[in-house]
Image (cartoon, rainbow, N blue to C red; front, side, top):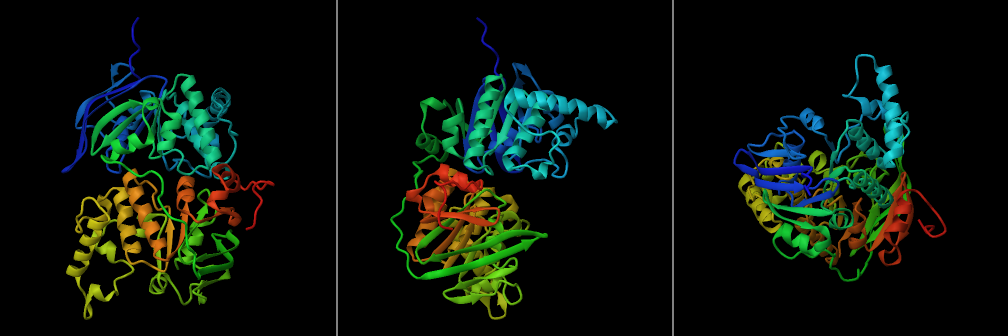
Length: 515
């Protein structure tokens, strides 16, 4: 009996960017009709490897085989012709186009669009029914939920006859119920003979959905195992090279006086009400977690409290002293002067200047600190020395203060922002998506720093789309949907199902609670 050729086989793939060896002699085989996970730390080379497979990069050395045949992939069009599709973490959709218009974009049959749209609408209906991807072909994308937008991305690849699907961190913006729906769709695709490669840092998802998993470390493929024959702790150790604490280790909180009080906060942005009457308080020595799908007002909440945008109504006090939320007399600089640290959700657009060196980024917002100045001039040597010290203690790699921020991996960029804001032990820490795109080892480290601040008696407002993170770190949890707080819970008295319903705006007898 002849054994079927693998759907994908990589042999000796190597890729360098200047002196950095991103992939080193990587070989990997993915069987047809399976779900194959790829895990590894930030900078391990996962994205580079998949970018080579999808034609974004060209390997320096090595061969790619698709269904047993050598298949050069010089660009993404060649990948599409080879039956490879990629669903990116950040969707590549035109929001004011309909579903069917997005699907045919770049794959039109000719100059006349009407026949292409009619054909696509018919095929979309067939694909939707075959794979359980129910989406209205004529719906405008911006009016769809995030989960349905992701279905459009998958349909777009299937319309292009993809037999191999690469999904990059596919659940990062989904509610738990949407993630469950996605997993059912992936299982259906597998049953129909599709091959799926799943890149994720969520080990729970790897264990739940994959058949095999490959582990990468420092540009090399270190192991490939059957998922049924491993465990999350073993995978974490293979990724990092040491044992990793997967559960947050903390003692019960000992809340003190109220640090932050928010009353009836309103924010209007772009002609839309983003925050609609939010009220809460945070005490010394506790973490209030804000759960919710991205885009439900959490970003605006952090930005108002951090002095980046103005509110349109409400009141905020810090230690019973009012904070100006109109933007007339207060900004991010004055917030820091009052003891508020802020790790923004978007490290690249709001936390760093990517072209500036690490030592310059470490001083942002704190350039008036006496230890950074010699009389009227900034002491560059002192800032560089402080940056080197922070890099050592926060394990930033490479530990080079002169390296531009853009040259660090996403996880190490995050560590630079975290070190700048948390190392000063602010009275109130605002922290958004602290471990987004961060590897398992760095997640453990950042979580420990957050708990250490709490145990020093600091107040922390945590915003995260990761329910595991919210449940593990928070002492209290508030759920936001459509600019409102749907309810507040103690982690010990709720579960992910209840929080997921609240995140979707569903209030039942079981989810109804005090806001």
